[in-house]
Length: 155
Image 1: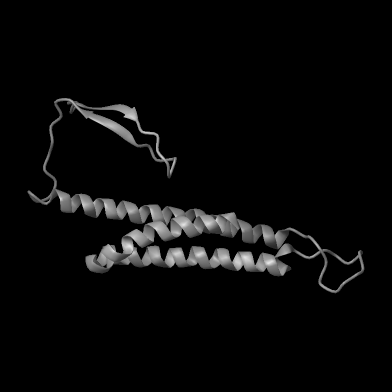
Image 2 (image 1 turned 180 degrees about the vertical axis):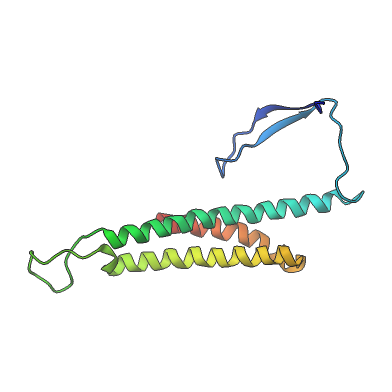
């Protein structure tokens, strides 16, 4: 039978646009205890911290995808000639051979692989239930990749 939960609206929010955020009405809904009594706030924070880690991992995924696409493009896109070559009939070189492009690709790689390492380390801490270290790293694992993987995509 129907449980009396209804969606009454959608929240318009910043952040990951592909995830729907709704307002729920619980009109006569029946609730069920999940877990032990009087531990709801502990469970809620555990769930929220894992969601925060998911935001960081989402940023890493976007940044890593951007890096891989950039790398592929830089390997394929010819432009310019080798340094010191004056002959215009010389074949153009892929832009990955230009120093500034290399610098940007290496910065992208450092940002996204650093973010990935941090996210995977935090995932390990979730699995091993190392809450002391995880409590310290969770805000970092959300914010750092969110800032620097977007910067990687800007590059």
